Image (cartoon, rainbow, N blue to C red):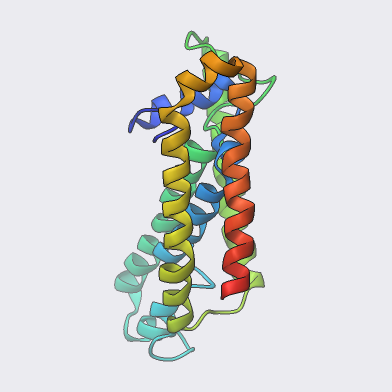
Length: 206
């Protein structure tokens, strides 16, 4: 939102298309924090704590059958699909793909179909990543999730927010002093430095 200067999802996508730099590359720490938070919010492994709260047979699912169980399962999958949509739109460029979709706002029917296909392929890829993680990682305990959320993710997210706000606030001055190209590299590399320093620090301290 800070980088694009808007809360509108289409503006965020268009900004990534115009610059050619997806926010997964410009905001790596924000992407990791959002991805982990999406897993926890969607109650997917390794954070499927509601399912493991009662028993490993199926948790609260053992009390339901038929249409009630179906509604529970559909709501869980809709969580995952919604998270995949948001991840693709905000960090993976949405419909943009270098050399395929272009960045112009004027598109033909064929161009619109290609953009829809690119967007759908990215969403399916993120959903596949959700599934691969579910098959690969062990479940966290509840206290481990709380420690990860409050002691690691929240401080890293705030640090990233502050750095991005500073970069965007002083970008005009940097552009005037160093030129557009150098200012762009500074705006790109600073979040990566915060990502590496923050991740190493969190790993050492925890």
